[in-house]
Image (tube, rainbow, N blue to C red):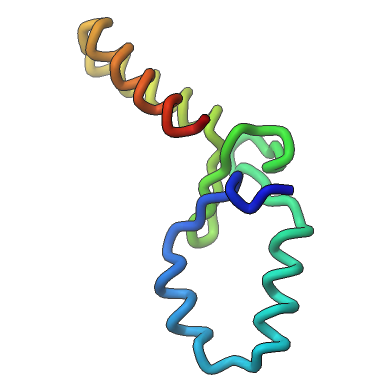
Amino acid sequence: MSEEKIVRLGAKRDKSHKEHEPVSRKVEEKEKEVTEPVYCSFCGRPNTQVVKMVKGPGVNICSECTMIAVQYLILNDRMPSAEAQAILDAFWGKCR
């Protein structure tokens, strides 16, 4: 499982909080994070079945659910389709 598939929010805060922990404990936690799947809080899919996963404090969202949310917001705001397509293209370009 590629660590690049999971984007963590608030990592700096966690890093400074755990700075004084023993090295062995840090290594054990890192191995646990890599082996355990991360599930989307919205659709329930694991990070192994999606393009990307954003992991936040207590909540995760996959790239597909993010895309649905973006499309919903674009349609609700009635953005012109050219602008909407540019936003979607930029989003998917970053996920690849």
